[in-house]
Amino acid sequence: QVQLVESGGGLVQPGGSLRLSCAASGSIFRVNTMGWYRQVPGKERELVATITSGATTNYADSVKGRFTISRDSAKNTVYLQMSSLKPEDTAVYYCNAKIINWSRYEYDYWGQGTQVTVSS
Image 1 (cartoon, rainbow, N blue to C red):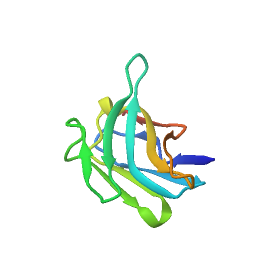
Image 2: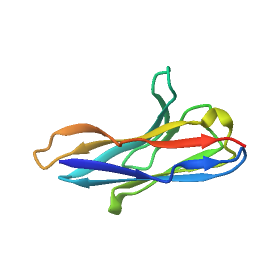
Image 3: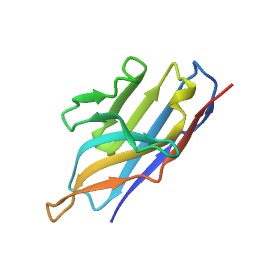
Image 4: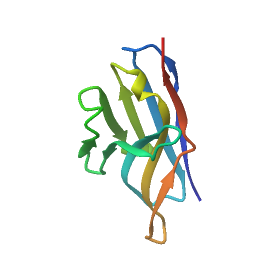
């Protein structure tokens, strides 16, 4: 069993900052790519940012220059530092991780989601 536990969402004013965290725990041999996605009601879930085990990052155009993804591999934790937040960043943010278990199979895991609301 593997769990992804997210934290750090909340309400912030436009222009403000928030930091999301997501920790993976359980039957883990290795964590490969980790990432953040977001979803608003009525729309598909979209990629925000990903980071590989080698620390290569990828960002959606809409967040480049404002968001920074990072990871602490020793803690199996991924972070999303969000700055200069805009109302259009309001969404439920989901953590994702591609995890290899002790049987050497890779599975895709999702966190439970954390609400980020940008509003004055």
